Image 1 (cartoon, rainbow, N blue to C red):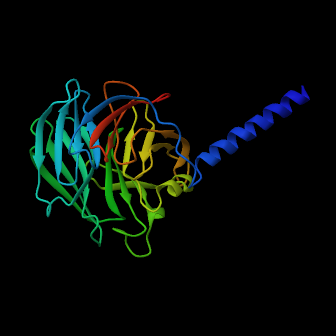
Image 2: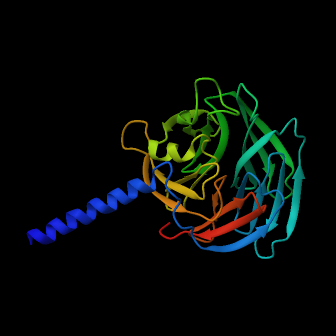
Length: 273
């Protein structure tokens, strides 16, 4: 019995060590989840959003709407680059596509929320947030609140004396006013560096998943019981290198992401969502 307990304790230690190594800054990404769809989309540069029937490919100043069943583009929008220098992440909320935008790589960092009609992609309105604790890269809707990420960078687009370690998850009310905020765990920040968080999406069962800028992986995080530091739960390999993500609201466990190199929308089935 003692020998069995010793073996089990050793195995537990090995598993914990393996999990820790998986989060080392230089460790390889986990094997990617299986891909079930790839849809070519020239706008697939920054992020993707899904309403279950369509997917929306997001670029800095343009959006394409595609029917999932056929891959056909059914609507598009093109904005002026001086007004829309860097849209990043969007989410579908009712009949609106709500997008995080900033003036990246310009500084000082300013941010805005850009809102579109999902049917026509007509730009409806802007909510200007002005100066904030970084560049707004993420917006998602969960539990009656808006969830945003303010990114910070070590280098291009970053503010002096504030790098990726200052990346912040913010809970907002319906008017996009901050109600609470959390910092990211070191295990995840080390994988972001020197960039920041480019995507985040709450799953159907209320778990938070985030992505960085260029690694083919995403991180499951949890709000802490106390304090302001998010908790890392696991790292999951995905087929595309970072950028903004979105869970499909119809097919459980299906994650949409973007392949910047091939300008494609990618659907992966994630085990254990």
